[in-house]
Length: 201
Image 1 (cartoon, rainbow, N blue to C red):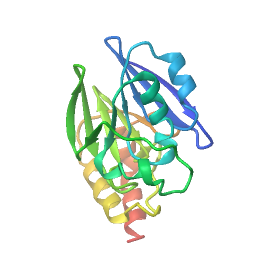
Image 2 (image 1 turned 90 degrees about the vertical axis):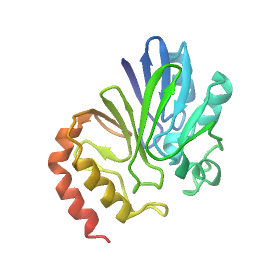
Image 3 (image 1 turned 90 degrees about the horizontal axis):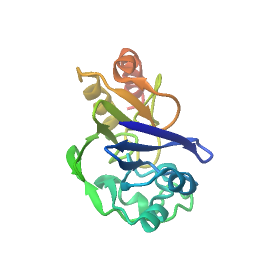
Image 4 (image 1 turned 45 degrees about the vertical axis):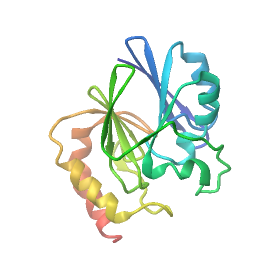
């Protein structure tokens, strides 16, 4: 597996291109991601969203139209692709496949697992490919995603953190912002974040 990343837009949102057996998956094409993606891909097969916030989905529709490939979005966040809840003027896009919670998919022979960790958004998910987690805005290096947006939920974030703390396997984490880390490294500080979230409920 080969992974290319490029921070995009004012929030430096990481857009990823994952190549396996000559096939490319585009993850979270944010603001102004279209040109970079088009320059990088030769055999793209799908676009995947970790969640529905504008800085992760901005270029969905442009890439769908130019590459003629399907879009996969967590079902609970699909409303964000048309309703623009944060009022950023996000170009509308429509998913071809709505991912239902925790779901394992086979996309042109490539196993892709969505792990649903609500809190940052209702449908917020980690995308697991082999031993890598594309963690979106759930887990960052030494930090976690915000839980104070209008569609966020502190109680759901708490449940998600408690659940991810119990996972025994390790994964390399490629977050939606910032640098890579590992699940084990983040589990060491997760009790701190659990207490921070619990204090807001």
